[in-house]
Image 1 (cartoon, rainbow, N blue to C red):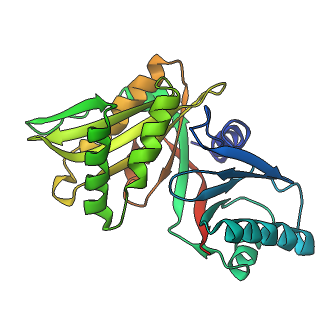
Image 2 (tube, helix red, strand yellow):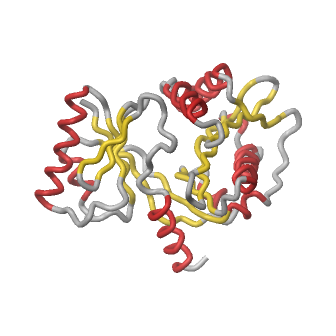
Length: 265
């Protein structure tokens, strides 16, 4: 892919995905605006700040906007994530967030590409391993337990969050588990963004002993086929350094980076 391709894909990402607002909204979630920012409150894990552009805000005006978010979430006693993309302006935005008390978490790469390339992949699963679509809360709890084993932290918010999404509109999301001997060894979900060309892929965590066996590739291809069936032509993933090479080999292109900046009262 050429630089022009990457820029075109990034433009599509900016125009169609950002700001990242839950659609349909989950129960108890409210969306508020403060200048160019979209502030999402009532999520199960922490608040979320998103935007397409900051409309040229810089200097003292930008610091004041950041300070209002800190004051708002401090008043609620709630943590909040400010999702910073690598091409956001101004270039010192990360430094200003840090100065206001936000802490950067792990950087991920945003990759975008055609659904067809992913859907056409035919990975072979190990013997005795199967993929299954799930909606039951019991299965969501098994996903959270698998994620906790992988990341060694609390992932219980996934259960409530995914359950609310499925309840709000079961046609907007599909959750898939990969099982071996009745044990969930990997899981992921795909969101079909309404009024866009995009599906977005999430999850993909895999138990350590099951990595390197084609499971992640199979999970990606399966969800891509679901997206293709729904008429989606582009897919977007916020990917880790581990999954980025796999996705790039499947035809996705790195268009920017993303870093969660988190403020915790």
